[in-house]
Every structure is written in structure tokens, then in C-alpha cells.
Length: 299
Image (spheres, rainbow, N blue to C red):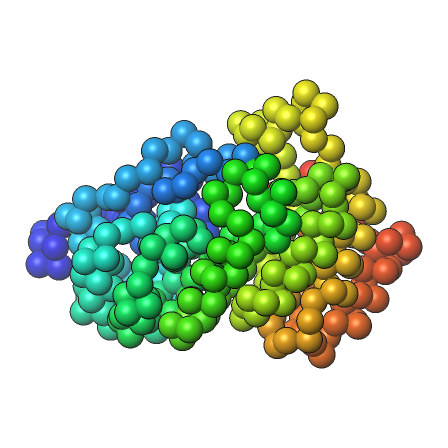
């Protein structure tokens, strides 16, 4: 397929495509399948999808299709789990090709593991930013090192902080995801305090808080079934969220706990909206805030 060809096929998507909520209106370009790490015990998104880089011919074909049929999209998200796993030369070629083929795209974004961020030099990250890759989504999940080890993230909190700072130093927008409940009931508040400390040192532009939902195809689900992991009840999750929010240092960031997995929506800017958001959490703890019914929660 090419711009001058006689026929245009739809964009090629393999398996379920997962993207951040803030990329809901973005053009999704799948350049890899699966996740280059794919060991996290809580994640069932990519278990049956081996990691591979899609053929360049298919990526070019998808961009040709987008050039004809997707002119209203001004943002583009690189899927699947970690497009930053592409070799440096291929990432540069990809971003250059996006710029030539879709010149109206004003922002390119991607998920990025801590490991693949740290594998890039500062010069490489700066080059990506100059070519249009301006937003990265990194899954911190927790700043609690024992929990990071337990869920097999493959890095400690210090390396997470280093990766976050290198993204910011390159001038990119950094969005960091945290997971309520990931440390279990026993370490719930330890997880919240440690996560607040790490976020305060990292100072991402956006904090996205989700709630752990145990999926049957994950090791963590099997640990729960064997009685080795206990998810906090809703009140425990709300206490965890309150502790995390209350202990963040007063740096400027967007704070969102409005994902479909959460029992209620919370969103604001820190530090100015902290007290109002804490009051909302207190309403939930007091039982006077309507909560999302269980069947309506989703990943």
C-alpha cells in the first residue's frame, strides 16, 4: 500500500490495543506488539502477545493510510507496551517518517519502561524530543522497593527516579502511573508513603492513579487465590489514596484518579486543589460519596 496505490487497507492492529485515557482521541500507530519487559505479576495485558517490532513495510503502510484518512487527528500514540524498545536508528527513522507523512501531528506519545528510558543516552532522548516525541507514560506503580521486587518490575525506586528525571531533562512531558492496592492490605500505607516520596523527588507533570484489578491470567491473581495476597477493601484503598495525596510535597502537577478502575473520580492540580480532593476522599471514607458499582469498574 502507498499513497499512490489503487487501494488502501485499514490500519493493522494485532490483538487488544491499550492506550492511556488521555490518548482517547489520538491516532494509534502500533509499531510493536506486546511489552519488552512483560514480567510484572499484576499485568495481564500482554501475556499472550510476544514482544516484537512490526515490519517497517507495515508501519509505512499504516502511515500512508493515516495520511489519507486520519487528517483530523492532531496527536499520535505509539503502541503497544513500549515503543521506546525500538533500536535508536529505527526510532529516529520512525519519527522522521511521521513528521514527513503526517505534518499536522502536533504531539507524539508512547508508553516507556524505566529500563528502556535508562538505556537511552541524553543525546538520544533529546533527539526524540526534537523530532516530535514529546510525552512519555511510565508505570511506577509503587515507590515501595519491597513491592517493586514482589511484582517483578525489574528496577528499584532509585532507578525510577533517575528515569523520570532524564525524561524531564529532555523536555518531554512525563506522566507516571501508580496503582492503589498493589502492595496488598498489609503494606498499603507503607506503599502510599513511599510512592509519595518517590513522586515528590521525580516531580512528574502528571500523576495517574489507578486501582489494582486482579486478572485471572496473572501471577498476582494466583497468589490471591492461594491466600498469599490480600487486596485492601474499598475503605483501605481510599485511606491509601488519601495518604499518598496528603504526603506529596507541594510541587506543580496534574493529579488524576479518574480511571475506570477507581471507585470514584478525583482530578485536580497540585498543590492548589489538594484540600478539595482530600475532602472528596473523606466523603468517600464517611460513606456519603456515591461510588461506582463493581460491575462498572474496568481496566
